Image (tube, rainbow, N blue to C red; front, side, top):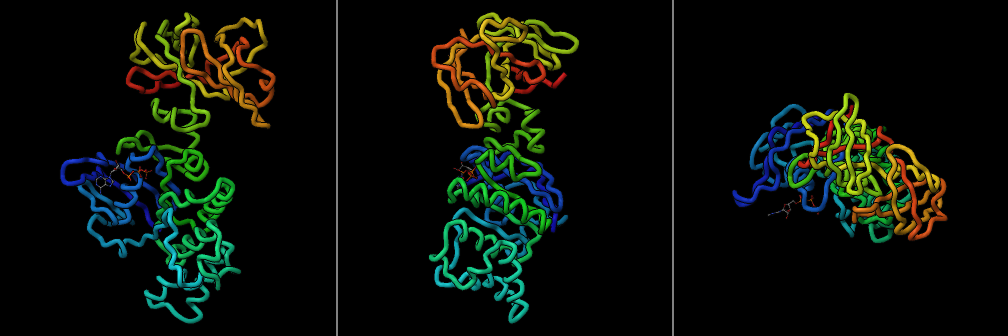
Length: 368
Ligand SMILES: Nc1ncnc2c1ncn2[C@@H]1O[C@H](COP(=O)(O)OP(=O)(O)OP(=O)(O)O)[C@@H](O)[C@H]1O
């Protein structure tokens, strides 16, 4: 097991195009960290630099406390699992898993025991004599992970390992990967563009955008306290509602904003350096929007017209438009809402404690 530290890590192609713009990140020994971000943000490049598959153009990479920039990939003590399983088709599962160990000089009963133990952990012991073409996608990915486990790496690197699996298998494999981490207690770095995977797997999530870190934190921290508009909009489905507003009043314990239709909304935020009239974005998650009885009148309430309704069984998501704002807002209702029809008028309560504010540069106001 090893800690991984990046100090000002930069990636430049052809000495001009900069893809990674100076990443500082400390991953603790035994931690499960997920790099998440949209396609092309540079998360795979960052992982490949840690793996030694891409040269580091600037900055320092330390693995287990040692400078690793120029250490050969095979000597870094890492094992990488890719989206494509890259199994040897002519070898059995056992041979695939034993391959690297044989190269390293392991043999006989010891080799068998090591492969057997990994196969047990991954519940593929009954498949050891099969060839890859006789396995399902999920089983193949387990073999690929097994091949990494037997090498007892200091750090596991995963590059979108579940992307080729269907939705239900992905859920199952997520649970298994978490279990694997608890059992092995090895440092794991996992790349995905899927925010649900990031939220469910990561002890800490690193949100990357345009080759820069937007925010690092636990899933809870990032979800409840996003530092900026990008993180707020990236994590969560439906995505956080964003409503244009301007600052109407700055109080000791909150900020009052005015929406396009003149409605005043209080947010439990610290006014900081904001001034009256500043353009801001009010953010509130779908599950925090409470549907009120028709004709209700209370503070922090907006009127809206139902656009469409998604009934999902355990919940209903109502999409509605507010006067003066073309964007649809989403309301997630654990109960109720299913009987609403397009065109109906509704009233929605926005609890101040769940109202986030972002300045014109997208930075979040501190919570009050
Ligand atoms: N060899 C290369 N030369 C120049 N640019 C490259 C090269 N490889 C990758 N890039 C660019 O670097 C950026 C980051 O790519 P990377 O594969 O790391 O993104 P990603 O976040 O992993 O995306 P995805 O989820 O689509 O795999 C992209 O804009 C890509 O076009």
